[in-house]
Length: 267
Image (cartoon, rainbow, N blue to C red; front, side):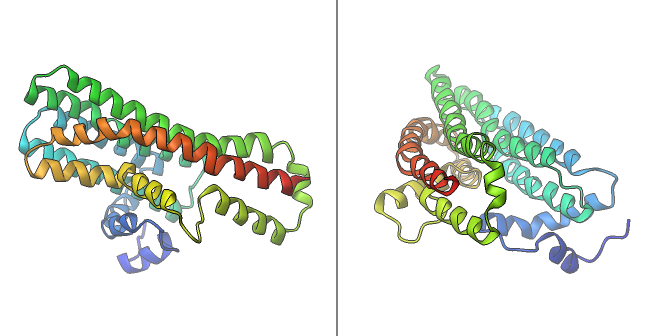
C-alpha cells in the first residue's frame, strides 16, 4: 500500500482538532506509528489488541516495585494511550471504522486505565510489605470502574430508554430542531458549559485527574521521584471521594435535566 507523507497523512486522519490537549500532544507521535501500521496488513482491531498487551506489560513492570521498572511502566501506559489514538487513525485512513471497532476501542481505554493498578499494588507491597496496600489497590480500581460505569450508563439510558422508544417521532422533526435540542441537552447534562460554577470547576478538575492522561502523568511523576507507591496511595484514597462526587453530580446535576429536556422534545 502506498502511504502518503506524514504531513498529508495528518490532514487525512486528523480532520479536526481534539478538545483534549493531551490527545493533541500524543497525536504528534501517534501519526508515525500509524504510518508504520499502514504498511502492514494489520486491521485497526489488531492495533487495539496491541494496546491491551502494552497495558499488561505496564502492569508487569509496575509489579517489580523498582525505580527503573516503574518509570518504564509509566511510559508504557503513555505508549498504550498513543496506540489508543493509532487504531482510530488507521481505521479512518483505511475507512474501516465500525461500531464494533469503536466499542472495542472504548474497552481498551478503560483496560489501560485500570490494569496497571493491579501491578502497582503488588509492586507497592514489595516495597512496603503491608497488606493494606491491596485494599488501596482495590479501592482505586473499584472506584474508577464504578465512576465511569455511572457516566456510561447515562448514555445507555438516553439511547435505549428515550431515543429508541420514540425514534419514529424523532425522524419527523427537522434536523435543525434536533441539533438545537441536542445541544441544549448536552449543555444541561454538563457536556457544554457556558458559565461554570465552583462545583462544576471542582468536578472538571477531578475528572482531569482521574482520566487516563491524568493518571499517567501522576504515576510517572511519583515514579520519577522514586516513590511509585505514592501513586497508589493517591488514587486509593481519592478515588472513593471521586466516586461519591461523581454519583452526586451525574444524578443531581446531569442526568435529571438531560432526560427532562429530552422528554420535552419528544412530546
